[in-house]
Amino acid sequence: MGFDSFLGNAQAVQTVRDLLARGRMPGSLLFTGAEGTGKKTLALMLAKALNCERRGAQGGDFCGECSRCRKADEFLASGAEDLARRRSIKDAQKRVEGLVYFDLQLIEPLTRYILIEQVRQLRATAYTRPFSFSRRVMIVDQAQAIHWQAADLLLKVLEEPPDTTTLILICPNAYELRPTIRSRCFTLQFTPVEEAVIERVLAEERGLGKRELALALRVVRGNIALAKTFDLKEYLEQRKPWLALLETVSRPAGHPPAPQQWKTLFDATKLLAEGGGRPEASLKTGSILLRDLMHVLLGEENQAVTNVDLLPRLKEWAPALGLDGIQQLEAGIERSYRLQNRNVNQQLAFDSLAAELLRTPDMR
Image (cartoon, rainbow, N blue to C red; front, side, top):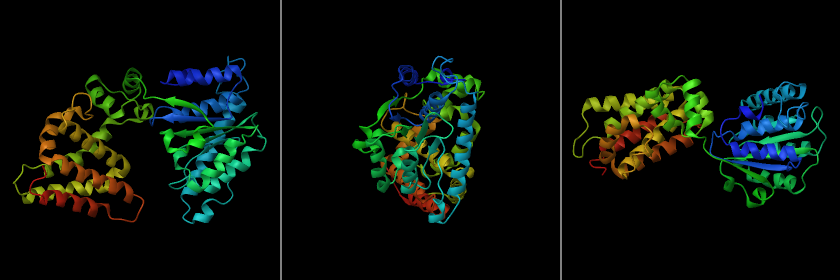
């Protein structure tokens, strides 16, 4: 246990350790960088290290076993349970009633946004003394999702930092935050995790062999969180209906669709609408394939293409679809992302898009 268990971004870890060793921990920090590079994990580790009973004996590290480290895990579990319960409440007013924050609190978007009531509770709690810890730690994950009406409240906390609380903001792209918020935080930049580390996780924890690693490494692309949960079989299943759709719509110019093509197409769109129970993951898989087609169309296939096992087929589909066809499909995926949380028949949207592409006599 401790910081040695953290994978990748050694410079960020060393910076945190140095701040702890010098006793110069800033009141506000900003962890920024690509998704899945360990920002939230390191923030939670830091929260434990700031309060661990054995930190002195551990050489500035946290033990993960003392009463405070265990209490931190309890706080996180209770917070996650409360968040899930509140997200299930349909009444917007009741959804934010009775917010209570612990000495370690992970604050995440309650809807599409982190709401003003959440930030108001953060502000009220930050200036009170912690109950169980020596220092309260409040971690705002996906800080770019803070509602614009709540940003001013957060800024006031940063301008008048509380003596008892450390605030950690997590945001993939720091420039999505206001300059006034960024300037009041100590920033730690995270980078994609080294391929050697990702490969070791995929091989040892996910059990992938050499032949499977080439594709998996490109899908994961430095995302350690994804590497730890990556299921290659699931990815290949999610890919199948996209391949059927692309095979059908990427016909040679001037060749009208045969009746069997229409059936294949609508079978594929039905599967795409269902998304295998994970519609967002399915849409992301489609986005990766379209990005691959664009790279092939532009002659950038060596390192840029993710689905390397499909390269011969991609080379056939890209010129058949052309730039206009790829852009039509990209627009369809963007539309599906937006419609996910609405009461909309996704299959009708996919059917309409695919039929439009099939009717187009020449998309090049």
